[in-house]
Image 1 (tube, one colour):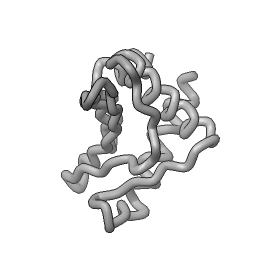
Image 2 (cartoon, one colour):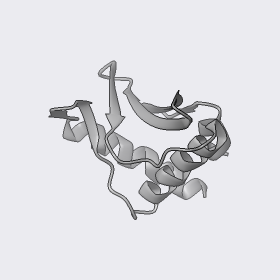
Image 3 (tube, one colour):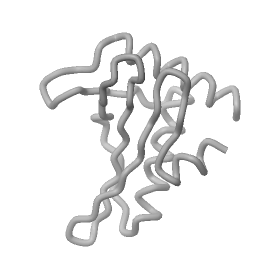
Length: 106
């Protein structure tokens, strides 16, 4: 269920939401995942390398596969508020609670 929601662009949780966008550049489609912290009213982004796609659908698939790897612990998320400033620990904790819910969902 969550994969379909994310493929449509937005995955809603109680504390956070995850947004998926795809931008095109010179035949490559660049997936990007961002987190919105509802309590702080702040956006953060994943600073991990998510493979580009040759089509928008492939870019979406790559982003979903990346998030699956984070959910099962094969990748560690790197969250930033800016290129030089990491997201606060509390945002990582909220993300972990959110991902646990997705993991339990299957």
